[in-house]
Image 1: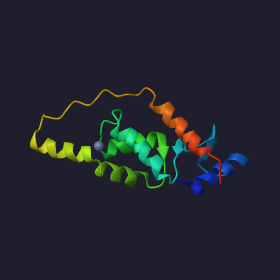
Image 2 (image 1 turned 90 degrees about the vertical axis):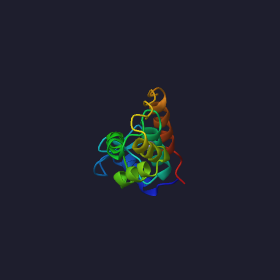
Image 3 (image 1 turned 180 degrees about the vertical axis):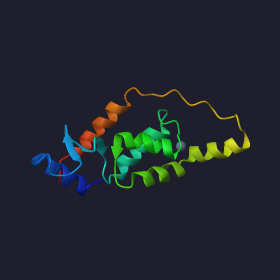
Image 4 (image 1 turned 180 degrees about the horizontal axis):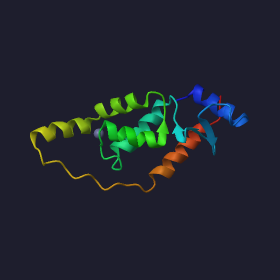
Length: 135
Ligand SMILES: [Zn+2]
């Protein structure tokens, strides 16, 4: 769960805000070109993907749409391939695809998005993670 690279960036930016190109520190959160930097924290990446793809707000969009959605808000190394991997291994998407072939027109309408509460919760979680004591 630790990401020494991100931690060292945060530390550097705390001391000298312009020290790392393209990175800024805002309210204890690390940003890469105004996108929240997740770094190599796979757990957080999966959490974000789950929220932006699997959750009702994500609606199981395809790789491209999911990627664009994640890219607007977050950044991490190999973002695109992570999204590709996540969507390709999503069991609901695979099921929907095969069902679509067998029964066109039988797909369920997308659930109503549940925006309320998601962002503040995730943001708080991320801030807590980024501001955790460094050991
Ligand atoms: Zn899916």
